[in-house]
Image (cartoon, rainbow, N blue to C red; front, side, top):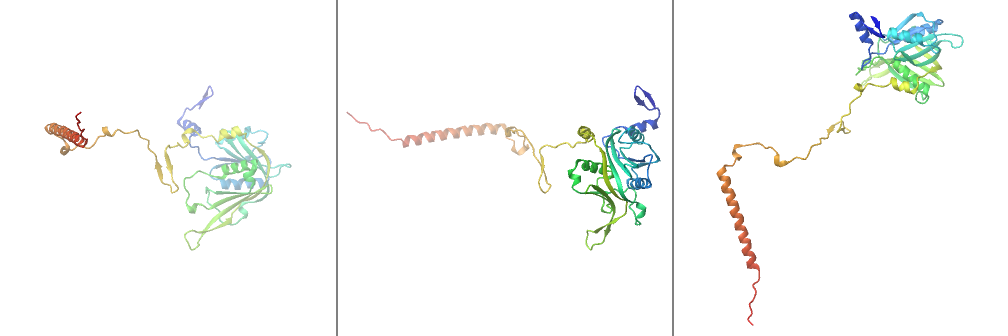
Amino acid sequence: MTYTDGIVKPKTKRSKRFLQSREPKLTENVKNAMIMKGGNATETVTQALKDIYALKKPNAVMYKKKNIMRPFEDSTSLEFFSKKSDCSLFLFGSHNKKRPNNLVFGRLFDYHVLDMIELGVEKFTPLKDIKVSKCPEGTKPLLVFAGEAFDIDNEHKRLKSVLIDFFRGPAVSSVRLAGLEHVLHFTALEGKIYLRSYKVLLKKSGCRTPRIELEEIGPSFDFVLRRTHLASDDLYKTAHRQPKALKPKKKKNISHDAFGTKYGRLHMQKQDLGKLQTRKMKGLKKRKGKMATTEESEMEGLNKRKGERATTEESKSPKKLRTDE
């Protein structure tokens, strides 16, 4: 690839395909996440990153080397790695005396940091400590949020949005019942956020609807909310803007009733029935000679009727008596 006047021009077909894959699209690709650890990371932080990477597979990139960076002070390194790996989500783990066992969830817009939320790990149970069968890799999870804080507090609202973006997986049009086998439950209670992971067991119930049981498979976290870096309202609105081609077009004069029946309204101009074209038949055609005779007979009939009316009026009118002086 060559750089001329700030424009990247591909030299080979491979580089051309690579640049086309990075171009903006109407329907964007699945959001990938990059998972990395800082210069100082404990065993708890390292194992937590591995377990979250196992939940996020295959839409994640795991960096094994340590990266000395501070996202809240300087985010240029994060933006560089996101552009290199084409990731719009990130998870950064670090540890220090002031903020032990630290996890930073964040997302980017146009390769610039949009939101960052720092969570402290107070209690952690890894995947390997729970000896049960796990869900297959790439299973789309069900996300459940419990707690009033997710609907009231602004920081918890944005945290809910970040967690949905991070764990939601690819968008699908339909899901079969047997595919609903993984549940991620988030609970906000007394200033803490609890993350639990369950496997859905479909058991016999004696009827068509199966009996559902939840089995904890791990990992489980007890988080405490620490620092936040939230985008401004204007930038947040710009990031949620959709192109006009994706917006559904409104169809006029169409309505639906309570039963889903579709009704349409048609607007037509006033019709002139005299110019209405009807079906032509040979039996209905009139001959020219008969048309003239019929017109004459109709005129004679009208004259006779007028004469009869005049005679009846004269007979009914009273006669004047003549008197001689």
